[in-house]
View 1 (cartoon, rainbow, N blue to C red):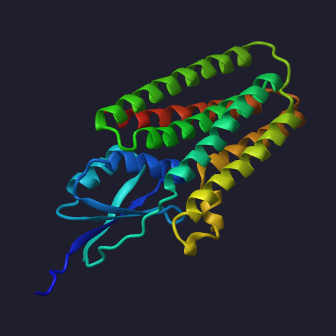
View 2 (view 1 turned 90 degrees about the vertical axis):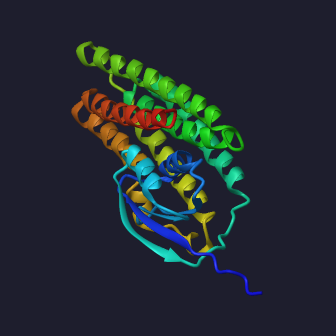
Amino acid sequence: MAKAEIILNKTIFEISKMDCPSEENLIRMKLDGISTIVNLDFDIPNRKLSVFHSGSYNSIEKSILELNLGGKRISTEETNQTEFSENTNQKKLLWTVLGINFAFFLIEMTTGIISKSMGLVADSLDMLADSFVYGISLFAVGGTLTRKKQIAKLAGYFQILLAIIGFSEVLRRFFGSEQLPNFSTMIFVSILALIANGICLYILQKSKSKEEAHMKASMIFTSNDVIINFGVIVAGLLVNWFSSNKPDLFIGTIVFVLVIQGAIRILKLSK
């Protein structure tokens, strides 16, 4: 008796704000629990997500739109693809990038306080935010949906609290007379963070397939994390050029806003 051919639907989404693997993990967590999904195939360089599923795409599309990552359905078609490569090293890789991000959170927070740079302090919180995303992915694996929501809620509120404290410090320094940040420390540490972000992107993208082992330049330069690193470097140069702490406070404010936006996305997972 011939084996019946299984037909799935393949729905492709464009995710305009999917800049790095942390957004990928947010999407994975959001879609976790939708029983009709068979496989998710992420193409970060081109900001595309292919969802292999049975039945309607409506619940999938609704969940993606709720994340406010600029998701838009491109197409839906039938496919007979039923075999997908499994990445057995995914958990190990997540631990690796979590470790890198958390280490640089500590490095940037410490050097930011010592060098009096709000840009470095803010970027450290952005690193912490990525660590939260990877941590939620790891600690919620195999757990209940309730457990995942509890972890997401705790991480989101903690992140917002740190960002608010950062905002208050920016205001204090803006209206007060503070010593200039150490611009050389800002630049040096940001270059190290830039390298760390590149390594994280490389590790996670290399895990997908041999075809993606060599990173495309677009994948690096469209990442918010990398843009932030360049922003702190430029702020350091401007601090030295104008002998003013205002460029540092400006980039710090921008990053704190991004951190709060990321926290709101995490909190949406707890609903």
